[in-house]
Length: 93
Image (cartoon, rainbow, N blue to C red):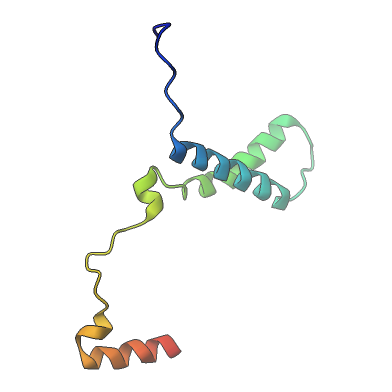
């Protein structure tokens, strides 16, 4: 890095994800059962086994975090009168 160039500011999405992950791990660790042998290695093994499936749920980027985009912004219940009946009946159940 050149001495006259300023460091890049951190990506807000990455910072937010890091904070969320840290909090989720801290909360999940309190929910895990106690260890029969309380050593750093046993704790790491238990945490990895329990947290790996949770880590798989973390979105890979900001677009995944926002979720899928709707293909159409129209409500199907407003297009057809018969669809309105099915929408209201499914909403009430």
